[in-house]
Image (cartoon, rainbow, N blue to C red; front, top):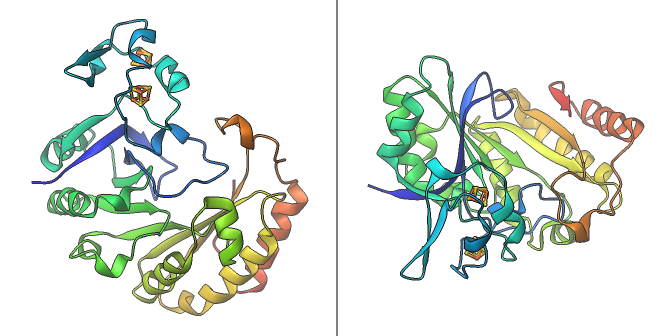
Length: 280
Ligand code: SF4
Ligand code: SF4
């Protein structure tokens, strides 16, 4: 049985896919997005112990050089996250697929399905496949929220038990994608085409940061490239306004887009054939 580092589980979420869902956030990411709102989800803890003495409720302790987290003592004050200089959090629980499924079952019958998010959940494909298989047997829907950096064609059996993928197109241009994330996007775009071709691309998302990359070009190229696949299955385009909350201080100088810029992005997607467009 596989296991994963679970950052948090939101029992009921209406913003992580269709309907009311349990959203499971896995720890660790292979991108370094300048506008990341949860930078503490990027890395695994290296047990430097800096955060342990700062916890006001002694929810953290040092056991043989490893941080031990006791969730029942945590008051979610976020002090440990603010102290950590490594883009990590000590509030991680290693869970097997069965333990995760048992946690999900506490929310049935109030959920339509589950969504794996992160961090970057596709770093744990075997774990997700096992949880999804259990969810399917229980009649629950299964979605993945991903940065698309790992080739979905190589995930043995995962897509068979996954209803759809919500994929970030952070920038369409290769060099701009590096500017936004420190990583190129050839696999991301291959994944977008592949998933759209098999009817499993539920949604693409672009965060609009006008001063960081050419958002008009990204929406133009993304919508033009994916429009032919709309005949196979609907694809939602979620266009998200950059907001500073939670972003690391060194990247907080970017401005948010204006309403006019957001509507301009929407109009570009409509012009290219998209009709299911959400601005947030
Ligand atoms: S968030 Fe929890 S573990 Fe972290 S410092 Fe606060 S009480 Fe301690
Ligand atoms: S969470 Fe961060 S500060 Fe705390 S022990 Fe791990 S690496 Fe160090």
